[in-house]
Image: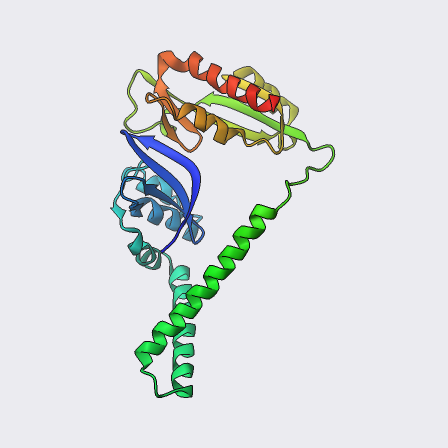
Length: 259
């Protein structure tokens, strides 16, 4: 069973976790054994299935970032089917179509055992999907760089701000601080809001290129430090390192801008 891994990583308690995707759901993969955080997956499914309910607050005492029960990736479908009715419905439709194909194949050729025809159909489906994936990957590699509309080349701002206690890691020490990095389209903000960010942020960068993927570059620079814990765009580290961390972020942005 394959899942599409993405670049973002989390380092916690000397363990590395990768944030990936599985059939539209975000998953956390523990790198040392490839196990999936089932607790986090169920939380995400519940939030999507019940958007009007504050599920996140209910489960906050159970799960914090990478904490939770980890299961083998082979059990991923079972977790999704148990937690999501729509997912169960879609899997059932797929298996029903496969079953209809097997029965049709058997009716057309009764000399072959139906169990053998099951494997033939499954192999055909798998091969077809594999060929499609190969074609799509080839198309992605051949894509030209995205064109940026005139007048929108530099419309983003980046701010670094200290987070409140509700967003801090559960195991955060008293001598640690957590910052959050946000990249915002300035066209979505009123001038007064922009000025407030400029005054109150630990770091304020204006006129970032729209195509500048700076968050990943900052992660690459900071995840090399053992005293920094990373969760999404949140960074926790000793308070006395704040100025130094801000300098690293500023230097990373300057380097990317120069390119």
